[in-house]
Length: 284
Ligand SMILES: Cc1ncc(COP(=O)(O)O)c(C=O)c1O
Image 1: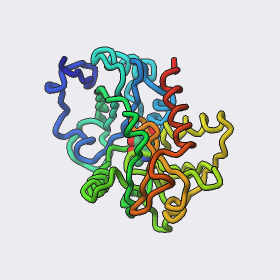
Image 2 (image 1 turned 90 degrees about the horizontal axis):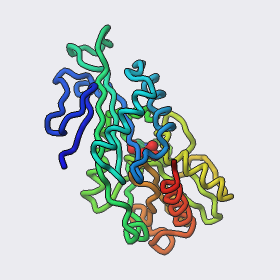
Image 3 (image 1 turned 180 degrees about the vertical axis):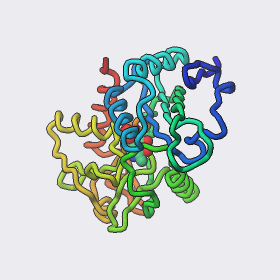
Image 4 (image 1 turned 180 degrees about the horizontal axis):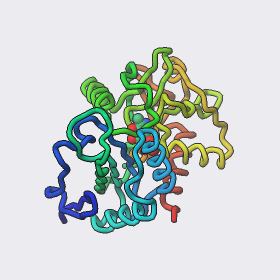
């Protein structure tokens, strides 16, 4: 079945869907986006994702081109037309098409794009084994809280990590503190059993999975601390993991050359992964 994309009010087969050459999203990355997980055909954490989208739009001073009910309708329609049970919805809003000029155009109409695709469920073996991450200096700008499509630094770092045999990288600030993964938030579980993740600031993206995970971990009565942590601390941790709309909860079992714990998923990470998977299955 051909995939269907939404572009500015139209539902089109993906190969026919296009935007203008002078779209500011293409020329300046003047554009924000969201990725929402789909489980059993439902959009997980739809409202927090739309809240974050509104915040990103406000931060780049772009008025929302569609009111929330209309946006929700289109999102559901894209999921329906693509017949996705499990996967992801991608939504992007750019400042639209205008003659190339850094100054905001007086009259451009924002471009709204949506696509959806299936994703294989997380394989139990992959979950058990976890991933290896490489720590590298964070090369990004200082407003990582805005979910913009200016993802070239993330892409370059992810590819260098892959070339060196790692699944992903953890980005590290000038003080030796981990900011986040290239497309995920970073967490450790200390040997004392505390779950630690960096607090919200301009330094990281305020992950929606991170937000949900904090709520679920608190419900489970686990000890949570939002504070930055160093690479050395991460390497000495009992467990580590990442969260993201498409990575869910993925254990990190190796950081650079150091293996964590037994080199397989730890008990706290397993509990959180199971709780998150139950949360996705139960959402209405
Ligand atoms: C840099 C970065 N941090 C964190 C995340 C996780 O955010 P979310 O849980 O909303 O997917 C992402 C997701 O793409 C990301 O790109």
